[in-house]
Length: 225
View 1 (spheres, rainbow, N blue to C red):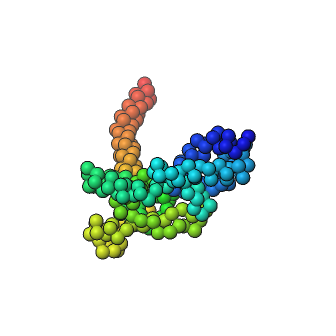
View 2 (view 1 turned 45 degrees about the vertical axis):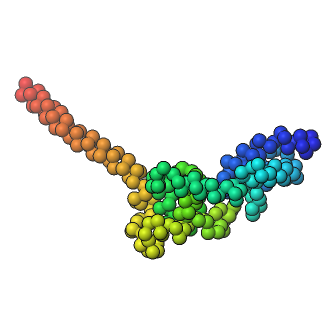
View 3 (view 1 turned 30 degrees about the vertical axis):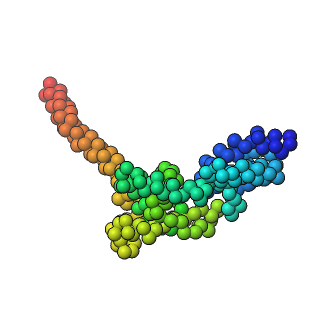
């Protein structure tokens, strides 16, 4: 199969795989593991053809290769519009999800998206993009680990928005996921379950004495007979 025919065949799969990888991107080796029918050279050529497709000004995103990893990013011309989109939202307040992500970054910075996702149990990619668009967080390099994921921290605008001089002014907060106020929902669920157990435990003794008393009376009556 010639290069162009192969490209047309695998192009939608390539796009989908790279898109779902988000900001982490995929290495050529990772991509090759999904295409048993293609050689590494063939995939390399297909990726270059795909990259050229997104160079056009008619596209709002582009395919880039950073640190050996392929990923989709918004073109520079999109950012002013994205900033307007999020800064002019009907409500100036942040959603609970956004506040949760922002709090994690403030208390645990620098932190990666994967680390945030592991704590929250859900994807935080959209929340991170919104917080970046509102200039509340910023990237501060890459973590020295596999894939070199981006590290996030709060921006200078964060301090202005919340009236803080430094992170030392943040309210005291235990950032252990088991006890942190950020995870009140989990604690509330646990408390609810505990209350249920206590109620059931309290209700059981009421029935037991009655049953025991009846049993004793019956046994005494049998002995008297």
